Length: 398
Image 1 (cartoon, rainbow, N blue to C red):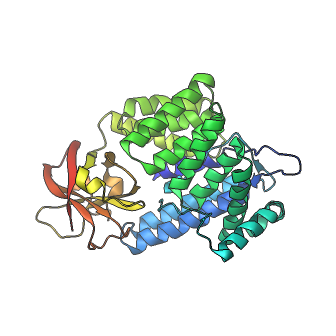
Image 2: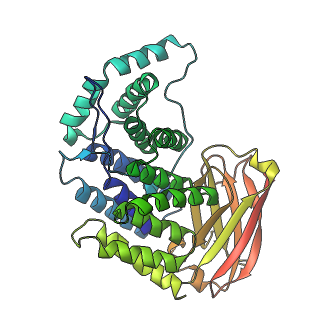
Image 3: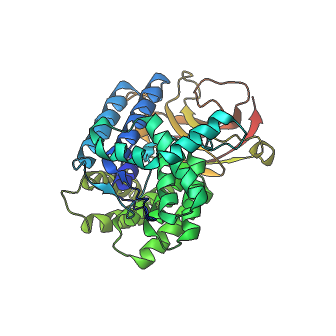
């Protein structure tokens, strides 16, 4: 849970500056941007609860942490999201869906008119967002603002504006467009640290091993040029944690805390991240690391926005999983780690079960219920009671 919270806190700490051209001056309020993330994440938590992926206690804890994060991060409604910034999701929270293009060149008169109006009203829509922070960010207004910004970018490409557009795409659950936008910004300005950090966070949401490697490369570049970049240091710890390199995660989080003021709203979350990393490094926490790959034939069938479920059942127990890990996926291989925190109920945890039947399934609908077209790996039986590593390969289509 803290990984998602930390990604969110790091993203909220970063600002974006859009370079002005004559009469155009663009910026986005932190409070407005964060409210969109907050509302989206809250809806996702409710969906996870309805699907049985969260119990009542986990839902309450997640809501409390999300609200705490939102309140502490929007204390200054006049603070502007400047170029020294990063994104996610929430992360982790963010959960990511398929990218949908905003501007579709299909000859539709109504779509063309909407695009023209969005461009013409770009400054007035920004002014509305800037002057009414208490109203939050209406998704429709955010869509229209993004549409106008995209129209402007087609005419006048700008690194800062592309970076802002990428962040907005993350908030609108359009990860593919977000990644493309951050890449465009990187090509225009390879040394923009804020964009590289946001790019890395979006890659972490994507979650494949290749994406983690790419994210690590961008973070190394930032830290080589700015060794005191807190957002990059925090992400260095997250990347190491996700890779199972807990000793390196401990080092990164310790360094981050030494450079951070105790009153910083991110401090407590990084402390928790450090504690979890230490526990896993010394073996006091039982972990199940699952390496998931897919056959080349089924790789071509993988749809954008598909959801990977990794689950653990008791071989002779009920069908209800002991633990479940859920993540949207765009590519393989992917490595995930389950602990007692992924348990469906407090009474049945990984550490309390003698044997684990480990399986994986890719859902095209994003739901727990098995549907035609879902892809699955053959389950593997392993002995519980200690940390284990399992490899699964998705080879069957249902």
